[in-house]
Length: 260
Ligand SMILES: NC(=O)c1ccc[n+]([C@@H]2O[C@H](COP(=O)([O-])OP(=O)(O)OC[C@H]3O[C@@H](n4cnc5c(N)ncnc54)[C@H](OP(=O)(O)O)[C@@H]3O)[C@@H](O)[C@H]2O)c1
Image (cartoon, rainbow, N blue to C red; front, top):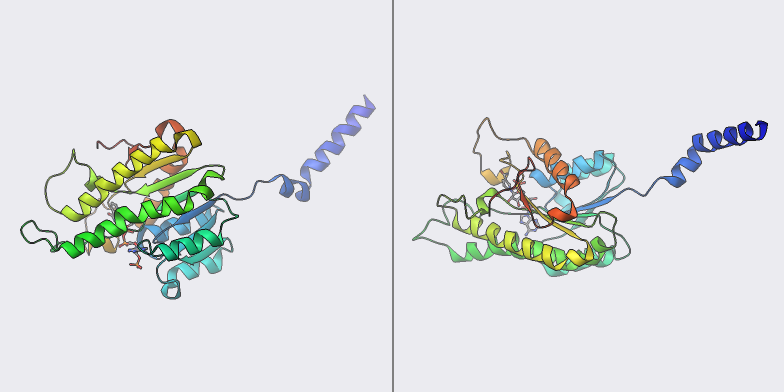
């Protein structure tokens, strides 16, 4: 009996040792975010940093990413890297730099609208159309190809593409052709990829982040709109609750399935 009590004391002492607790702690999970210098991407970077994640916060111009730098100064696990999702060299450079690291969640957030006046039927500016597809559709595909092995080697194995309910063919009511087509195509790529990556147990998901006050809405205001940090909180919740069975689902920010 005495022996048992003695053993119990030792176990309690070991359990309370900070050294042991640290060695038993898992490494923090890693998230890579594109377009993290402003808007929803910036809010996601800050959100995950506060949650203790390792954040690979990517943007086109790290030197000008003042707000992101402020976050990185406060959170040592935030690394800022240069990625332009239309430039494969910048993507591959970061993929190579982190080739020995795992990425639990890849968030393809970067996106552009193409403006409101360039995509009016009868007056299409096709060079803008190409640019919108390049960023919104090709960009996430390039990222998924480059970072697939990093995600596959991780614990959570998630590729999340930030889409829009505007990409829902079922719900469309006209206008914004380039943006909607780019997101609808992204939705198909995502659903397709979710099928191809099932055997590797990789979750490929779509999330529309809500109607959010950022530069993309060009000053439009409505009391129902979310702040970027509110959207980031909700998006994280949806990402966190994604199950392998739901791979390929199209969710909104509340976790409700959006019709294709
Ligand atoms: N806000 C909404 O209501 C709403 C609704 C539905 C979906 N979304 C989606 O949410 C995502 C984020 O949008 P947001 O609202 O945060 O817009 P935002 O404030 O305009 O931010 C867009 C981000 O994308 C980046 N970006 C643009 N082109 C890029 C490129 N070639 N390579 C890398 N980054 C690039 C921008 O970086 P630069 O500063 O370098 O341009 C910026 O960081 C987008 O995919 C958007 O379609 C937004």
